[in-house]
Amino acid sequence: EHLAGHLPTHMKGLDEALCGGIPFGVLTELVGPAGIGKTQFCLKLSLLASLPASYGGLDGHVIYIDVESKFSSRRLIEIGVKSFPEIFHRKGMAQEMAGRIHVLRPASLSEFTESLQQIKVSLLQNQVKLLVIDSMAALVTGEFEHGAPRQNTLGWHISFIKSLAEFSRIPVVVTNQVRSQSRDETCHYYFQVQSWNEAIKDRTRHDSHLVAALGINWAHAVTIRLVLEAKSGQRFIKVAKSPISPPLAFPFNITSSGILL
Ligand code: GTP
Image 1 (tube, rainbow, N blue to C red):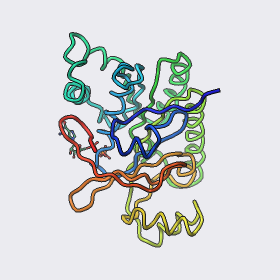
Image 2 (image 1 turned 135 degrees about the vertical axis):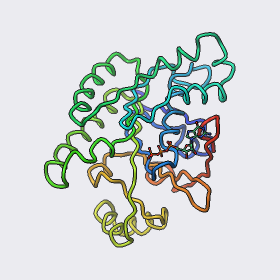
Image 3 (image 1 turned 60 degrees about the horizontal axis):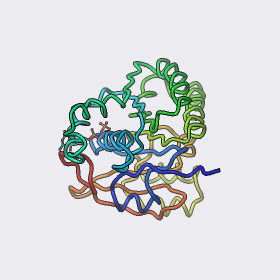
Image 4 (image 1 turned 90 degrees about the vertical axis):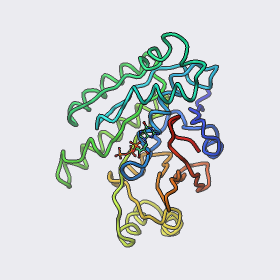
């Protein structure tokens, strides 16, 4: 049985590092501070998943969970027109492509929980080729005080989303904002997640000491973690966690054609 598959990002270095792109069947996390380009990355991936296979797309539908109302079909079409003019200038094509992206805006964690059940049904119909959650942290922020109830509910959501990726074998991309932490706190976090040596290695890998807001269960559930950050005015994507790639970093820009290496 052939389980492998990837959604190419059309960012050459990154696709090479990930052996083809965003893998099917697992969770890929985009982590970074506000405004770095996580949503722009998700828009590009949504476009690529909906494109015809002859253009390197997956010819599918996308479910896009837009927690903070950041999805913009105007921007999606702009990226499409600039990157794939031959498709998007065909009559009705822009509307067709945009119509393949189903945007859900849950107003609370309980609405999100309900939509997960619906999503499971849609995924069983096999037309959906990408699930985006932008952002997971925003969904849970403010819902709970820190402590046991939060961790239990989060644990359930994490397992459910992971199982959606596994049974449907589509790429699931989740964004998360980060908060800065002191060196000591960051070391402590990595010490729990990984071995001490890994902690040191990881710390030097991204020296901005950014840690995802969702804790250790989440950190374990994610197969690929891409950290987006800015240094001296240049944005970078770093492969911070991957079963296959070394810890590479790629400079990127956001232009009218979307996110580009
Ligand atoms: P949060 O959701 O706040 O955590 O941020 P984010 O990481 O999702 O950032 P987002 O993807 O919204 O990226 C914002 C950046 O993308 C802006 O600083 C702009 O540089 C760029 N950007 C957003 N929209 C456009 C656009 O229409 N045209 C161009 N050229 N750049 C854009």
